[in-house]
Length: 390
Image (cartoon, rainbow, N blue to C red):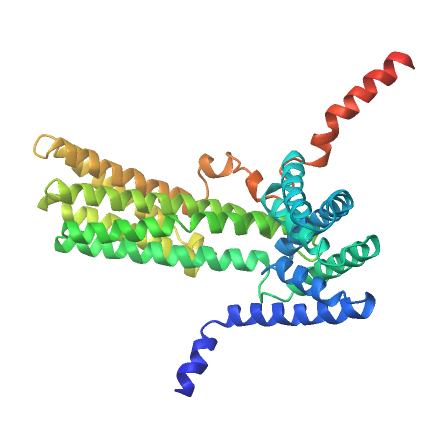
């Protein structure tokens, strides 16, 4: 019983570390808040708990959102209480006004939530100008401590976390291709193909997390002094390559499923398709285990995958008169997918190197529109007036 309880936590070391750091940060926030500001511990602990995340990068964003929310929320709270006194109208008006202003300033999802939350913290019982200032100070203390402790929330750097994610999904993709290869060789059923397709879809659903972590690694390297920019750029490209690989694996699973629905793969083509899928699986595994060593050989695993695909394509074209046309099309589709997987692993495809993936979506930023963009029309008008008269 004790061992089972022990391994329950041992197998979740990262989660245990994160909640331990979060608890410690909340306790420190309460202590420092009470030490520096009268009765400021509770507010500081609340804000710290809301702000702390598993990485320094995300906690800085959350902390900034808390600061923006505090400044706006405190001002609106004081104004509404002055006009309506504390009660139904003050609370309702504060929430509505905060939501409207957050939307008008394009603060994004994080800060838009923080604005009314912070305002309600400030507007609590006993509201006055001095109380609002105390709670404002407590909020800043909680956000600052959350940013500090978030550095210790995870044992790995943003680049390290991205590497782990890419390795995990690549291992799963290689295993799935190997299983599909064995299934094709042995004669798979529609149920087997459905299971492969479902697993491939789950792999693709991990793409947004990989992309977000790769973007975080690159952003972190831009401002953190000990981070390696070149390493961050490499892991960003590796994340894009992994995304392309996973999409091709899903497409292969869908093609095999469609073939099963239409009656299966012709006996004459099973072996070659299985060999091509096995070669693609080995190519992915080789890039996971020894990415620096595979280039020392005359023929790399990705070259072998391309050759297996080419052999499959040649045989399909030769048998064009004897094999159903739809089977030929599906077979050539698998060849194209394997070729793209090889290009993605080698990271030499223009689709990866020449097409820039957009930064994180605006909805995930603290400020959807930067302050410079928001104020540029005003400054342009001021310049026009200044030039006209001066």
